[in-house]
Image (cartoon, rainbow, N blue to C red; front, side, top):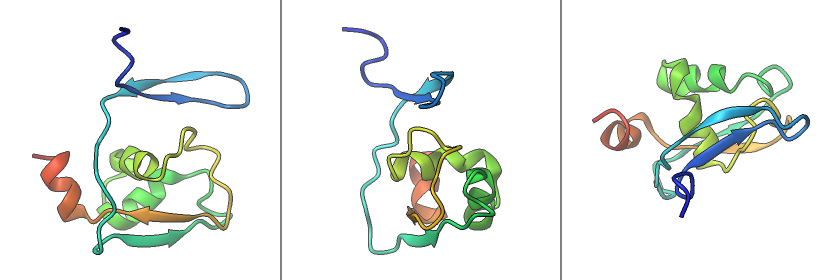
Length: 95
């Protein structure tokens, strides 16, 4: 078993650049989740989406994982993202 078997990988699908790994978040959908429709302006800036909902750009990866996004720089405009509330991630991530 590889030490990466339970890791989330971030890889650019166009050129194969490797961005890193981390442990999975393991959050499920919940009735309090919010929804965000990606626009042309924020399609390559998931950090700005994180700022809008969490006031913290470093939490972009929460949105990426929750929506099964392997390359956060390639989110097509028009995609609807499910955003877990700050209170929910606070219990899992920020505790």
